[in-house]
Image (tube, rainbow, N blue to C red; front, side):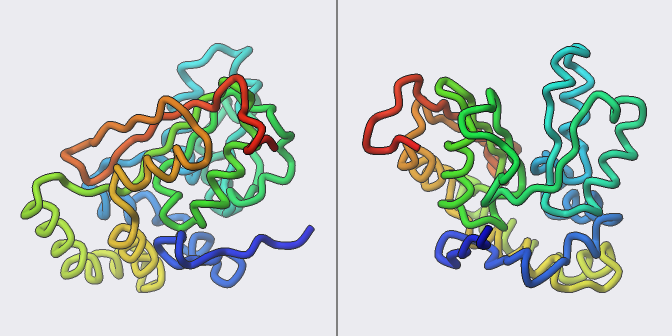
Length: 236
């Protein structure tokens, strides 16, 4: 299968996993780096080192756990998630997948799609289109990602913190791997605001699009639903 072409216009961090395995290199330090960038407001991609995915799985009954797919493009991240899962690992399915092309997931087979702090390093159009494809009609989309603080001077102060402090603490947290914080810093700076990303979600065809800013707007969690009756113009 041909690799998807990643558009730099909708990839806030200009990151291409086929050219840089940075997240494999920093997997053991990823949690510390993410905390430093987000002031410890952390929600895993799908699923990174498993921090959030495992918390959710622990709250589900055994029957529902068997239907949970924990995925990430980075095998080293998934290895950490699997180890952290302990006995729970036997009830979950771990897959190395690219958000741009979820090759093993059937169309309209998923009830809930979630991603967190990963959209900034994705081509958003491709990732949203793939989320749309795998979700069943009526399925739920949830994404937590970088946002903007509504109070302008606070947002400017946060970006200044990122620009001045993160090259130092990021270098220390990743053992000197500067590419890691370069990608994440650019992703935070270039990612559209909550309103802009909500518009992109709606443009894909999702309905009931809403978001909630968190602490106090550094990130926002977005909610949407795939309509039960898909309009002909955007059918898979």
